[in-house]
Every structure is written in C-alpha cells, then in structure tokens.
Length: 192
Length: 375
Image (cartoon, rainbow over all chains, first blue to last red):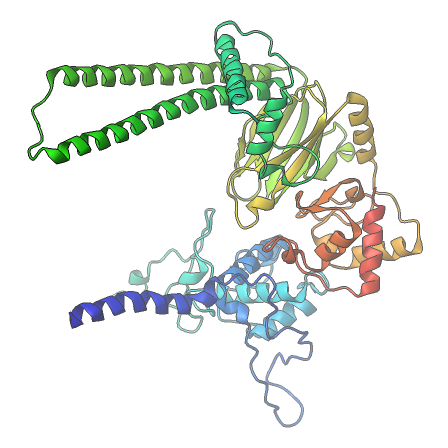
C-alpha cells in the first residue's frame, strides 16, 4: 500500500514540477516589458576605458527564457530585413551571427545597443523603427543563433525548409561540437 | 413560435428541396418570417456585431440559396430520423419497465426465443438499414447536384477579380488594375457590385486560413504557397460578415471581414474614391499627425499612398477613415478605439502583430486626427 502511495505521489508530482519549470518558457507575455528595458546608450563595447574600471552588472534579458518572445524576435529578424545582410545567421555582406566572434560585444545589452545605434560600415540604426521591447526580442533571437540562450526556450524547427540547424539544437558558442553547414558529420571531424 | 408552424415550414422547404432535386425550378425568393425567427434563434451567437448578417440561413445569392436548401434538407431528414430514434428508444424503455414488473412476480424469466418476434425484429432491422442507405444516397445525390449548381457559376465570363491575402490575423484585399498605380489595396472590407460574378484569388502569407461568408458561398481555404480561387455572386445588396474558418493562431476568432454588396454605381463611386492617393493633411493638428506618422514606427509596416510610408506588413491605411471597423472587424473605427489600439493593441487583441507604442497625449491626438482625415 505504502509503495502504491509513493508511486502515485511520484506520478502526480513529477509532471507538476515539469509544469512549474516550463511556465516561463510558454508564457506569452504580450504586454511584458523586459526588466532591462531602457536605452543602453552608454554601454561599453570594449575593455578599454579611462580611469578605474567600474562594475557593470550584466543585463539579464528575460526574453531569452521565453519561447514566444524569441519566436517574435525570429519573425522580426526577417520582417526588418536583418536577413538581407546577416542571412539566417551565417552572414553575407554583414558579419555572421552564429559564431562566437562579436565585433561589438555579444552581451544582451551590447546586441541591443548595436541594433539601436547602428555600427560603422553598414549596420544601420533601427532607432525609432521598432519599439524597444521588440528590439529586446530581436536581441534575444540574435543570441539564440549562437546557442547562448537556454535550449528549451530557443526557437525549434522551422515551418519551412531551412538549411541550418534549429536554434534550440545548437551547442553553446564556446564549446561547439557541430560545425554548422560544413557538411562534415561530427564523427568525421577527428579521424581515429 | 409554434412547433407545428416550424414543422410546416420545415416540410415546405423539404418539399422544395425534394422537388428541386427532380426538376430544378427557379428558386422561389419568398421571405419567411419563420425563417427569420429560426435564423435569429440559431444564429444568435454569430450575429454579435451590429449591422450586417452572418448566417447560412439568410442567403443573398443563387449559390447561397442552394446551400441553404441543402441545409434545410439535411436538417429536416436528420431531424425526423432523430425523432423516430428517440421515440423507439422511449418505447423500448417503457416496455422493459413493464416486463420487469411482470418478471418480478415470476422467479424464472422465460428465455426461449419467440420465433414470431425474432422474425419481426429481423425485418425491422433490414428495413431500417435499407432506409438508411436510401437516405444517404439521397443526401449524396442532393449535395452533388447542389455542388454542381454552385460551381456552374465558375464558368462566368469577365468576372470582377479581387485578390485576397490571408495574414495573421487580418485580410488584405486588392483590386488589380492594368495600371499598377491604380490598384486598390484595402483591408478587411470587400466591396462588390450586386449581380456581377466576382472571382476571388486567395493566397496566404503564413498559415492556412479559410475564407467564409455564409450568406454568399461556402468556405474556401487560403493555403500558403498555393493559389486557390472561386467565383461567387451577390444578388441582394447588403452587408455580410465573413470570418476565418480555419484555426490559424491566437487571434483566429478576431479575424473577421465584411462584404458590402452594393449597386454598380455605388461600387464605382467607392472604387474611384479608393483609387485616389491619400488626402493631404489640412489642419495644423493633422499636419503634425502626419509628421509623427512618418518619423515613428508606423511606416515600418503600413502604407499610406501619396506619402513615403510604404510598409507591406500591415494593413494599407490610405483610406482608413472610410472603413467602419479596425482590427479585422473586431473594433469600431472611432477616435477612442484608434487611440487605444495604437497605444496597446494587445489589450483587445492579445498577440496581434501590431506592437505597443509610446506617444505623448498631444502626439497621439495629432496622430489620430491625421488617421481620421484619411477618408
């Protein structure tokens, strides 16, 4: 009897915990501003600075934990023609966004600032073209391209044919195991 | 409303349907008050938005009349079958109670089969199976003939061609012209002349939608990457509501549109007015509004012909003030709803593609004044 009770409790509790953890992912925050909202115009883009280094607490973009917000970011990424230069993350006349190299920094607030301000040699400023919260959504999606967001929230398989891996099956940028689009399977990378 | 009256009406229309199966007379255009009452009862939930109707039972074209006939035929026959089945079930229940009462006195129920009643039951089963087959065959023939009559219009020559693009969650309506600058693009509102066949070319940019104006025609899907089309015709002027009939996401329910069937002259007036570029702002407030419109986020998605705004993602706003509804038929087009919609569209239509915007009171007032001037 005791065993049965335990099993029943387990059967009920395990999915419940699952639900608790997955709330945040599934929540459709139609009217939620990210906590880091607000212009970050004075963000530092490199380690060089005058005087003593000041402490910059990292900005936490909550959209990076929300599947809906990142899906919106993905939609805007093509709506706003980011794909025109960056392709689907692989880069074309703009730099690729799916590797670990960042010219102007890969932290959420840095990506946000790059989109808002624009950068030399081609990146236009999107100030006033999108509301801030949508720029945060795009920034979250951009970081998902290099696998920097939790995989359970990153966009999954596309509805249409796509040549690259879905964002949620990328490894983190630092320790990437797959070479995307190289056509070489991981098993053939290091011959035995 | 008396039941006998309803039955009589149902029978009349049944007779009509049966006779039309055989001889194809011109459809009688009588107005039945009882029809109206029934329709009201059945379509109470659908007739929510004031003005215009949205019901299969108030047909406004030859094709819709065929669909209505078919509907009444199915309703009548299945209704009668339902009543017979219920009556038989009731009789069986009452009988078994009587049997039980009698059986309680006996200790041993008699279980030997009664040849006579076994045979009778067998005959009844055979007869009802036969009847079911006949009824289904009748349904098949009648729906086939109705379908043939509906599609006979598809061969109409020189129809008015309108392109409809389904989007999450609104309808883009485009009247093509040989001169591209004379194209008319509007949203969630289709004007058609009465008595002229209209061909709709249906496309979708995202997911599958379905175009359905119950008063005029059946449903037709809009499939991404695949063009579909059909021809319909409105014979009676009026305002008919349509609705997306294929679940397409969060705001599927608020993906409505209106079909305005009007006389040829009225239609031409409307069409000519829509062909014009937008009215330039006249007052200072409107001028300020246009300035705000052109320098803020609006232009990223919306087009206003005659200005640099040429976004293709959202509805064309060139003549937004001439449209009675905004937000795909879900809100009336007033200054208040427009202002609320601009600030926070997610309050009334959560998940809609239009983003929330921040404007000061003065700017918002100017923007709304400008939009209201776009007649």
